[in-house]
Length: 250
Ligand SMILES: NC(=O)c1ccc[n+]([C@@H]2O[C@H](COP(=O)([O-])OP(=O)(O)OC[C@H]3O[C@@H](n4cnc5c(N)ncnc54)[C@H](OP(=O)(O)O)[C@@H]3O)[C@@H](O)[C@H]2O)c1
Image (cartoon, rainbow, N blue to C red; front, side):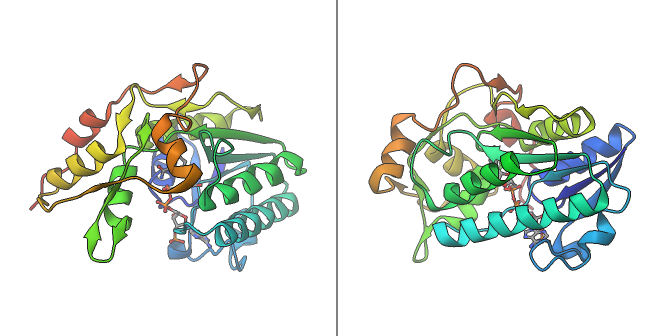
């Protein structure tokens, strides 16, 4: 099958692309770096020619609710409209576990995305995944107060992006299934420990203070409200196994 992966160069999208290729399918990578912009729609119709299903693994780097909602609304609407023009039969959206359990700017965009997919014309599947092991690297790169790197206090049950990519590829070649069970990792971790362990693994030995995020979202991060529930499917690779597989620093 010919399957487009929007965000196919990202932390999870690249694994969906690899899994599709390994299974003998034909992935079409959609990203600005590959000349397709889902916001402006430049190159989008051409990319969806002959495509059977679309996996949406796009993301935007923002904590701002309005920006997140604008990004996920615009990209979802543009994808669904282009899919309708191209006769695509299955839209697969990747979302995040517990996005509706606490108010958070980025999550507002994901809630808007899920709503649009759910009322859209294209038959759909939504998979909610827990934070990726790679989230430790994303936090290390992005969570800063001035020049200081910080680690937010959070209980999480992280999953390997590779396993999420494998799941997305399998979902995309199957029939649309609506909301499927959440996907999380094999065990609970502390995000603070993950970020510090990732920093050491890449040869960075600076101090990374643990910070409680203020407000209701921070409380939800700390009290376990953002963990998956008992119905979640669990991946196999632990955070420490993922970390051990990282290339050592040069
Ligand atoms: N990170 C996590 O821990 C986590 C956990 C669960 C679910 N998720 C969800 O998984 C999805 C992917 O997250 P990620 O962390 O893999 O993202 P990411 O690494 O930041 O990758 C984002 C991808 O989107 C592409 N992109 C962004 N804007 C675009 C545009 N206007 N047009 C075309 N392509 C565009 C980027 O490529 P270009 O920059 O080249 O355009 C890149 O391929 C998100 O929806 C996120 O909510 C993430």
